[in-house]
Amino acid sequence: MIVTAPADRIEPREPKYYLVKRHLLELIESLEPGALVPTERELTVELATSRTTVRQALGELVGEGRLVRRQGSGTYVAEPKMTWPLQMTSFTEQAAANGFVASAQLLSSERVRATGDAAARLRLPPGAYVYRIERLRLADETPMAVETSHLSVARFPGLVKAVRRASSLYRGLSESYGVKPVTAEETIETRAAPPREAALLGTDTGAPMLVLGRHSFEADGTPVEWVRSWYRGDRYTFVARLTTTA
Ligand code: 16G
Image 1 (tube, rainbow, N blue to C red):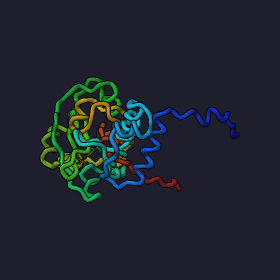
Image 2: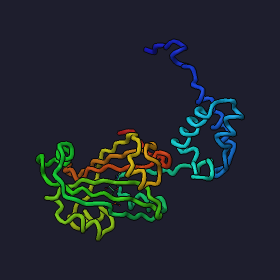
Image 3: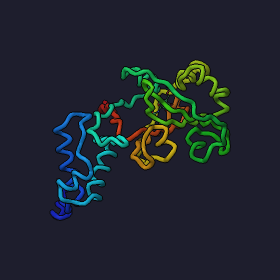
Image 4: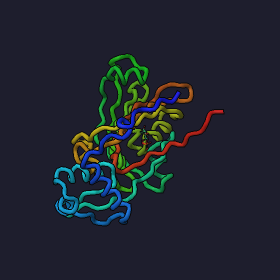
């Protein structure tokens, strides 16, 4: 059954800043990436509105990755976002498939007692030790993601060294333990950037981020890792290829 909602609920009144935003979107469409857009002050005069209204419209477009602000220089039309396929492969392989060279900076690695959630996901008794490995992932030297992986210490003794040696978690798992994650559940949520992630990824605290979670398993269903990756929301379009099941 299709229920028709009253017209005023379908078409709510447009906030003032949204008119400015629509005007700016039209302008963006007509310009090339890298083109300078008018200043806040110019837009305020041209559109006969307040500076706060213009600032809100510009702020949303920056957050959505349509515009970029350069400190002390101005606001420009952004380059198109990078498309990044969601696949059951490693960051290293995904980057290579997209023509980039992947690398990682080890930000921290510690052995910590698994919290209830991590323990349950990795099917460990509460309080069991897990490695918490935090890496900055780069593609062609550009920081792309801050990734925190949790894996069992008992199952993967010496994992941090293995990852360093292989410069890839998945290669390290395969070479040192004969383990290959083959299926995963991946989640995507939006979050506002915390100060640390923002600084590492070259954006502002509070900027929109996409947080990917991956819970991966071996062929027999044994859990391997629980990972959380922070990506800048203004830079990436994640692509998942969907097919019907027979
Ligand atoms: C991806 C995976 C992560 C995995 C890593 C291994 C997501 C959100 N993350 O970044 O779970 O640990 O690849 O990459 O999909 P590596 O072998 O290059 O270290």
